Image 1 (cartoon, each protein chain N blue to C red):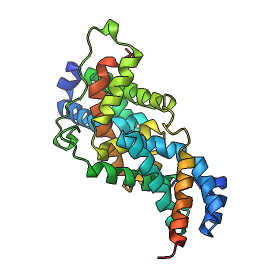
Image 2 (cartoon, rainbow over the protein chains, first blue to last red):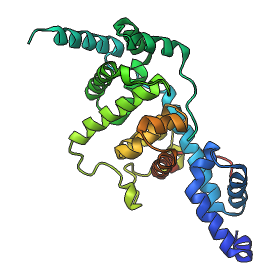
Image 3 (tube, each protein chain N blue to C red):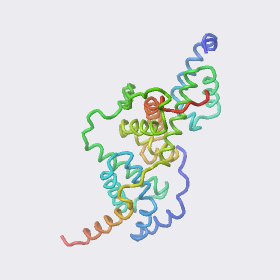
Image 4 (tube, one colour):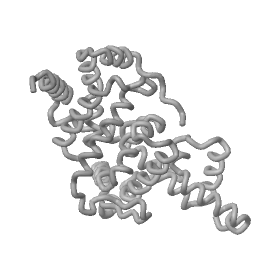
Length: 97
Length: 194
């Protein structure tokens, strides 16, 4: 890291800022090919950014795990409650003033 | 912004019937999407009764304005937008008393305390830490995280559901992820370095 930073300090810091700002887009594959390579190259030289990407990736994976672990609704029949409310609303609309 | 995929065929047919006043068709849409919308809203409001109320209200509003749905996005994306707004309306009414993380000030203060020795860290700790970190987020940051990372919507769909451009959405999502990562990083399993 030190060697890369000393050799091209301005480029290193520019890449560092870019990686910090676009780490999520990198993980989501939303950067174009040169930008993806820029982040990859920098993370190879910068342990701090490598750790950021690894922990951010772990966080996103853990968040996706919550989808599977979703708890069942209390009512167990959310749709039934909505439909009852819709029908009651229609009756209210039809009621004379 | 990239376009959403074409509307699901089954939804599209039901929406067309609902737009001509067929309430049975709309009730079928309710059966198809109620659980998923409820799960999203519950993540945004935290309270099961409020989540049920917001879900019902969202469908009621959707039914009343189904004629304005143009079909240029997925029905559920349009429905999520109504649900997210409804959840926001409910949570805005509450006094929050400093429960949320002030991401705008760049001073992320994780709500969850750091764990003890690494050997005691288990999967349950990670889940608890995640849930606490999500709850600590303000609505503007929580909703992108819930829609994109938990519900698995595409960036385009999730941005549309929040009524945001993709750039603004990505910025909020990134800051939300950074805040959650800060709160849970000691609970994450060790992985290989990049």
